[in-house]
Image (cartoon, rainbow, N blue to C red; front, side):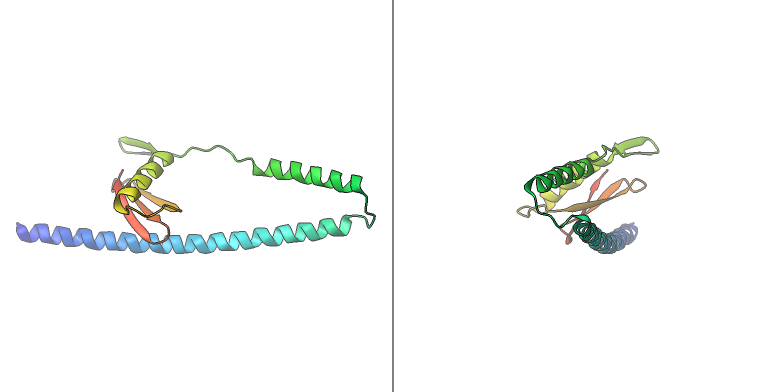
Length: 146
């Protein structure tokens, strides 16, 4: 009976190590994708600025500059509006939202890593295991019950 318990503990440790590795690789690929996305946006902005500079007339008048600034500000405001979203996961007899899972992961981080400041967090929800895994600040890994 003790041998079975030891095997189970070893299996859990291996499973946790495997999950941590998976989470770390997912974070690495996500950060690479983010960097690529930022580079693409910067290129787009530079291209648009260059195109706008070519279209602008050579005359320099205060009225035209003011008008250009106002339209640019309006466009920027329109682009910044975000769509309100809610993600709800239903699995077997349970229902939970992304926001609830995020709050639980943040609370667990504060318990596990006292004194550390939370700068960023990624969560991975595994309803079949009834666990929420998190990676905080790219180096702090943990989990909490769903």
